[in-house]
Amino acid sequence: MTETTTTVQPIKLTPGAVTQLKRIMSEQQVPDGYGLRVGVKGGGCSGFSYILGFDVLKEKDQQFEIEGLPVYMEKAHSLYLLGMEIDWVDGLENRGFTFNNPNATESCGCGTSFSA
Figure 1: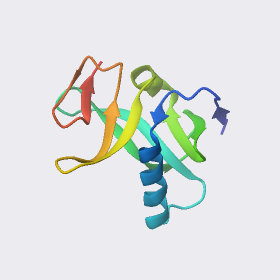
Figure 2: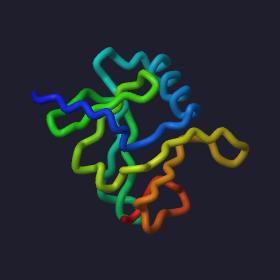
Figure 3: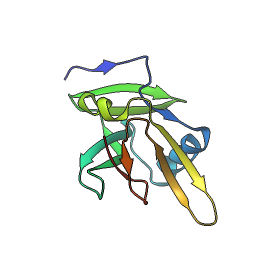
């Protein structure tokens, strides 16, 4: 497997998102060698849904690091995700990860689906 590491970070994680992701990794005892997988998949009410989870590095991935957190993203997904910011919101009406994607031409009310 060929590993591709890039120094340019195609996405941004806010400090709140990094804190929550590291907490989740610790609480869920995510094994060494796993990183944060960010991507898209077809579906959702607007055409695409975001993928956010922990996974191992795969052959088609690019790899980068944000605040000590390894991040994996399939190279083909960067077209849809370049410049996106992932944040953690902890409010009275909304709690969870939010996706601020400058490439999205439409998004749905739930904030986890978009079209480009």
